Image (tube, rainbow, N blue to C red; front, side, top):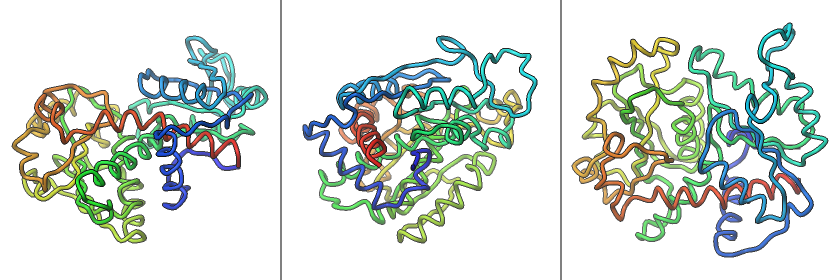
Length: 337
């Protein structure tokens, strides 16, 4: 039994097969892959695109989605082992994962880091505990990575490049740029964008204000390894102009500086110096007729200007639509393994 927790566990060919199936769904292919099947969707954090696309995807595949919000519509759960459970948690993940596996055919988890201790957060304990104790496949709906967003992103890149006669993503210049946000955000989409772009052989530039905003070494190392295997490359830049120069794809995301986990007031005075990292027309003019996207939600005129978001080179809405199609492909493949 294989889970869909990180794309690191899947080859480029396997991921491309999922994208190809997603394209078939987008073109109108029908499937009853989840006929008489059920999927538990556990949301420890809010959602708009993820919840909507997974619920609709289950329904369109003939299945039924059970949406649970631990701590709200379901019991709060404990994830530490050997604990005396005298706090808020009423149930342990050991029992919860096993019971849900008796009821449902797939389990999907959305659980962000607590943003207090990165050494603890990067263990991804919530979804890994479900994967350990569940007897059905587990899907990552965003934890410290976001593999469903990865697939939707690469699917959209391939679609967009084909439309402008850039026939293949391999060795296209891919810019992942940090952008300002008034509060620190999860690194999941940034980690994932590096993983998928490197898996598919793109030449990546990671642009961030300074070394404090570098992503975790685990994801940098995995991306370098992916690039070596796929014929791509990865470099880091702190210079806006040279990073944008000649880019084919610009992907924007904000994230909190890892050395400041649990010290966010101190980090704020630093991040406030870098509001000029916003994606605007002047920066996009430096690219190779570059395309722009973001995972959404996006604060307009903070992360990117209205002009960029409303331009014909912005494919953020196409990427968001693709979430539905790739998740149907993921569920279809996991249910038939």
